Length: 296
Image (tube, rainbow, N blue to C red):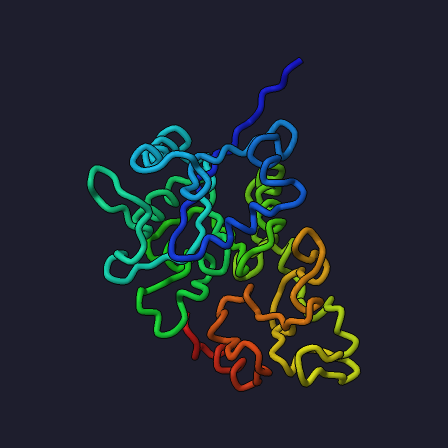
């Protein structure tokens, strides 16, 4: 007996960024990207990727037409994935999604249009979630977070932030699986930054393999030395994520285990708050941002 497969449409648009979030998801291990797009990621449920300008074969107006089709045929049923930063400077001219009938389609305009009709919005990566590198001071293109933009447009569609530069593929696919199986997350399942607690509930510092060296006061003074990397700029004590236990590159390694400090790419003030990247962060700098002195 054949069962009816339930389709979950996904529209994925990209703003100012490097496409690193897409590349990270393409490197997913289990399920692989092939399994995700072709098979039922959860029995009886299938993800239908309707639009992704980097992955889709179509181009030009024929591909843009898929967005309009998604709005009409799947209104209030599709997930909107937003990758890259959202620019609102100079009426959004710095980031365009494409063209239609000879008119440029701004990222800001498309985000407002699609988000208002989506079942949920997933801000994928730190650029989308919080502004990321493109929002660094002096922020000439007027980068803003998706949360701030939706609030300014009075769009109340549920939002989930999955930060990271790039985000781990498990964070994204795990969130999609949770949405498919359990529906939209309740307030208790997201932290105050709208990140899933499933992945972002513990400080990296708590589970770091070098935590014992930190407690013992054994710090590396130069790269390549044994010891905690705090003096070399590690931001693990201020960053929430499961990198030490989940690891990257198919579970092979992660930043600190590989000898590099955590740079805090999951946090909302990255990178301004945590620069210089390879210098010990001071309490004065942490307090400066906690009282609202940093870019928002």
